[in-house]
Every structure is written in structure tokens, then in C-alpha cells.
Length: 449
Image (cartoon, rainbow, N blue to C red):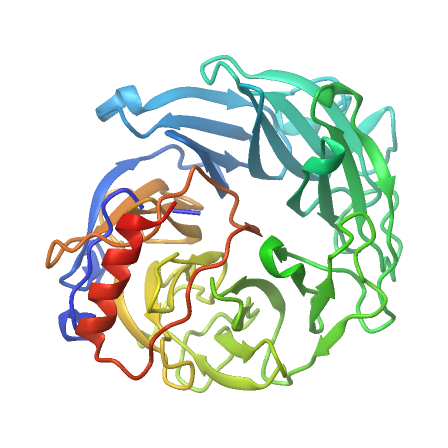
């Protein structure tokens, strides 16, 4: 998860520009700017993002692009690798100097287990393995300019998204695969009610295979996104009809049949989730199918206390949109003393929400692009080592900075897999002023391991 130079205004809310987006004009808070962009399209559908060191991978339905964020201009793009496979959501892991890339494919591909087709005509429905493929693709990205396709692991109903679970005592990775009967594959009969776990031996990833298929409770047809917090041995599963919390103390046997159920009639579609870095709260994201982004409507974030699963509050960005709009993918900035959520809102662009007081969240920065490469339709927005990396469905990659008053903050990460949270941070200090909390956060960021 994200920032190289994330800066913040105290109070940030004072810098907001509350305005209805105008055609051809970017709408944004005074404290947020685009650092750099790298378009591609307009016919690509861009999806998720992952990072390792200075390497950022941006997935799209036709493959993925690899960037070196230490470079400038066109030198940032190392490769545009075409390999058809919607959604092509991505994650990364390095082992003994070897960088592995994993991608989710949930539309069957003709001969896709061994072939990376550059042709969208490879999409198909009437087939099964080994003739066609959907599931997890594995690449060797050690040379980021020359990806090597290692292995395709077929999973029933494909892989809509996935969550990487390192199981280092057993020298392997476990990949929790989210699938549900909304796909067109041959093994997607409803109700699907299971996940797949793919085992990746770290010394021999080309031998990866399906390890197990844990069943789900009868309350859900399948799960969409799953966010694991390794330090607290817990996973937040967004399972279409409800949110669930699973015990993953034994990562090879997640507690899928004994979850905590979180039901809320105000949620249209349980899509994704993020834990605060102290493990105290979990934010569930509602990918509304009404797409209104209006006060009182659905498509909001909802904040729950982990200890008793109580709903603390919900939040909608304060800018009505003429285009489709709901919360989608985001993460929480790893800073002690505050809760700051970065999230993509489709037509609402990218927003930063302060919920240090979980009962009263407030937007403190935003960028809603309308110029240049067209209006925002943002899939993923993640903080990584001082910057916010957004992958926009039509615009491609936009990278944002918060620019005043030049106060650095946030722990430094070695990598970002947004659905895999790893380390705990201290709790917010609610009794202290925002200025004192920010000073403490800045100090902790400088001394963080």
C-alpha cells in the first residue's frame, strides 16, 4: 500500500473546493494536485494496482503495464504487456531476488493456461480446462522489462479478485481466490458458495496448484473482495449480500463457516474493505448499482468497530455526480494518530477521508478529473510511500500528491498489495489536538521500521 511525499494541511477540510464538476475542468481541493499521469486507451479498461519497491504494476483487461516510479516522463513505462484476461487484478511478491506477479482472470480465455493472447476475441464462454482458462496467472517479473509467463492455475468460476497470504514458515504463498456466479465460466453454477486457495511454492512457482476450496455459509452466494490483516489474524470478506469477518489464524484453513456476519440494509453491494492499522475499525465499501453519489443514498463507506461490529457511521463524498459514482477500491494511510482513507469513487475521482473520529468522517482532500483524457472513472486509488496511485478505467494511471503545508507523513513500505495488510501501528490519540496528532504522526513515520 502507498507514499513517497504525502503532505497534509491542518485542518485539511479548510482547503476543500466544493464545486460541481464542469466539463473539461478538473475539480479538486486546493491541497491536492496531479503529480504525473500516464494515459493509455481510450479503449482499455484499467483495473487494480500493486507495487514492489520502485516497481508499480497497473492491470487492465488486456494485460498490464509496469512502471519505474523513480524515472521521469516516458522513461517511467518499462513495458506494456498484452495478455488478455479480465479483470487482470494484480499482486506482487519477491522471494530470493525473484519478483512474482499474480493476476486474476474471470473471463474464460481460449488456450489461456499457456498462451497470453493479445486478441480480445480470445474471450469465450463455452469451454473448460484445458481448452480454455480462467483463474490465476503467474509471471516472473524479475526483469520488469521482460515478463515471463510461468503458470496458469485454473480455478472454478475463475478469479474475480484475489488476496495474497504469505505462509513463509511453509515456504509458500496462499492465494485466496474470490469467485461468484456472476462470471461466464463453465463452473459457475449458482449458488457457488466457496473460495479457492491456490498454493504457490516459493522455490517452484511453476508447480502452483489449487490447494483447497473452502465452503462459504448459506447466507452468501460468493465473495467479491477479501482483505486480510495478518497481524490480527483476521480477514474482512465482502460477500455481495453481507460483510463477514473470518479467523485466519491458520491461513490454510480460514474460518469461512464460522464468520462474524455483518448485515446492513443500507448497503447495496458489499464490495471491498480496509482495516485501520491499529486493528480497531474496519471500513466496508458499498459498490452501489444505483450510482448516484447523493446524500442519504447508498454507495457509501461504512465504518464498523471490530470488537463488537457496531456501526459507527457512514460517509458519502459531498459532490453529486452526473456520471456513475460509488466507492470502489482504496486503502488506509499507515500513519499513527489518524485514520485517513484513500479511495476511488468512479465518477467522483479520488478522495481522502479523515475518520480519526469514527463517528464523524470528513473529506479532507479530493481530485475529480474532467480535463485532458476525459472525466474520472477511477477503479483503484491507493497511498504508497507519499503519493496516491490511481488506476482510472479510461484515463489510465494518475498519481496525486497532497501539497501543503509540506509536512511528510506515513510509514515507508517495501511493497503494496492493497488486500494484504501486514503490520500494526499505534492507535489514534483522540484527546489531543489535530496539530499535536499530526506532529506525533510525523515523528512516528520518521522512526518507523
